[in-house]
Length: 625
Ligand code: MG
Image (cartoon, rainbow, N blue to C red; front, side, top):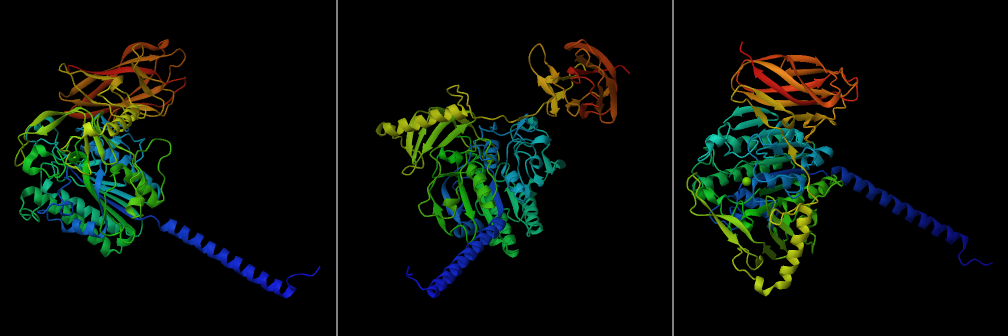
């Protein structure tokens, strides 16, 4: 058969084809290598600056004509700012839990503002932004206010941060509080897990945090880093260094904002000097709106309504500025709804990290918004306004429905560091169009019954998931916070009762078993598991130690050390016939010769039977020596 193509032409075509294929292959290979290289490089530094109680209207870029915030203005001009950015709840700890876990605060069990020696904290099982980035090889640090639990197991160093320097909670939780100082112990300043100073000079805080931040950037300029800078300011009591005192022309609050802006300037300058501008995503926001109770020592959320601790926009809507030259378009403003919870998935995306897949994460990746993708829309169908466990409002699109609730409105406001008075007010079922009416002034519920119905449906679905104290709904999607056992106080008669219900657990199996017939430390099936109590001695002396212990038939013989410091009382567990057959027994004495805090630990050395023992309590009784 006559071929249509001569062998020569066929050969040339074959050659051309194979050349094309090779070229295509090498192009693809190149592209693959480029993608791989980009993935390897796709670990931008992340700097997250987070203020405390800064208001929506405090910055010049958010309309404040008096504000002296040139560095933040520049950051907004070189990056993107958001008009509809929400935090998790209008109060410190809850908001920070949302930021760091990407979840509604009630999902992770953190509410309100945790007090000193808090009995709850962010569960170490939650996965924070710092942990996600650390897994990607980031150096991680926090300089500033933590406020997610001040017991050792809840500190930042247990939540993915290599370094910590700052306050464990709010700067007003100290003996100098204007109305409730007696409630508070001396304010500690932490370096990692150690208290390095009590009652630090607060005029230095912003400077100290900034100096640490600058050093951290310089130290880690050759590797990816995550710097979390949660300022203690402008939360009351306001403090500013001499650098900025009296410089703003608008009072102490203005000076404090000026100093925060200075700090932002130092960060931006350091990034530039180290050639890190194009490699660094910098973000700025705050945990909640202004504490209006403090009058001239609070910020200004206008045009939004109300402030901190309310579900009005002034409580939860915050300035949000993001800058990453070359990656985030300059000078843009986004009106899409975004939240602090979105930062976790967004950081995971830009750093090539993983969003936890074994649990619900409420935040969404907002990189399409940040990178200026045309037509990018908010990934959120709705935002839910909670105060504690109470669902108070829901927003979808421009619509916000308030469910009937009380709220604290300030009247009169305080002045110069002294709080004013809160008055309870009531808002009924009211609907606002936030696009037309961001100040929530005009209820339009009577004209929009279909919208109301939709929002009520969203609220109902949310209740089933996250719960609602108003309807006594228990949420199916909520997780437990860390629960910290209390510091046991010495009784009037001098006794110290270390009961199993107050014990701290260190291990996998051992636990407090609350059933009335048990009411004991039990399931002590691993020799590696141990327990401890913290207690406080006010009247020092020598104490007889009496334990109430049970042990099942044939399981006796475990050797266990009861220790306070280097005073160790070793025992051999006695078989009492049944684990819940408790028998009192004096095991020795401790000399606790100074007033103060002690820890008693109970650690097994051997475990010949099925379990170490059941231990209901340890009693320390003063002796008359
Ligand atoms: Mg706050």
